Image 1 (cartoon, rainbow, N blue to C red):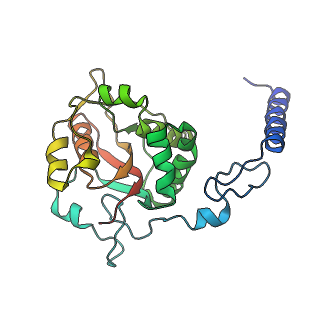
Image 2 (cartoon, rainbow, N blue to C red):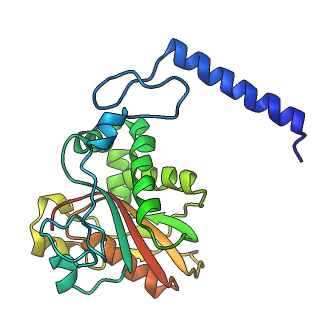
Length: 250
């Protein structure tokens, strides 16, 4: 049990420390460089945040951006023509600049500090569009060889940060067991073939849950997320929502 007085001084100390750091190292918008408001947990100025390529018209199944105007709850062409093992999806942004540049810096230049602000955008979109609260969070894994090459898994970093914001625990549930070509370098048919049977459930996995949030950085065809969802469904998960930072147009 924490005594109220100790809790007050602890909070006060954190507040003062944050204020001093803001004075010495003032924070600026990650996109335009404008100085941000003092003592506010912000990463973007209001103008840049408002002008990000937010997804408003989205597929009811995968959450990707719908380029063609249609019913509010319409499905994208890919979901209409494919069997989906996940049940719903939320994607925060269209795969476009300027946010695309931030993801590139995190993913290919190892700027881990960008995981928190990018996950903040994902959480904002999820809270606005999700139908229910998940029991736990997991993420699309990298093959061990790819992880060793890169040194981190960007989807895991994003999932952990989303979990902090939603106050939900993140667990590694899947292993990637095939080391194949990078999906981004393949066409649509090759992507589907490349990802088939690429994942398996972790050996000590025993979490039968009603609702799991599956996180990845970008959705293109959705094949990777779908394959992961298939394995989770086969191992006792009832409902899966996929959450991505960005998605390409349908």
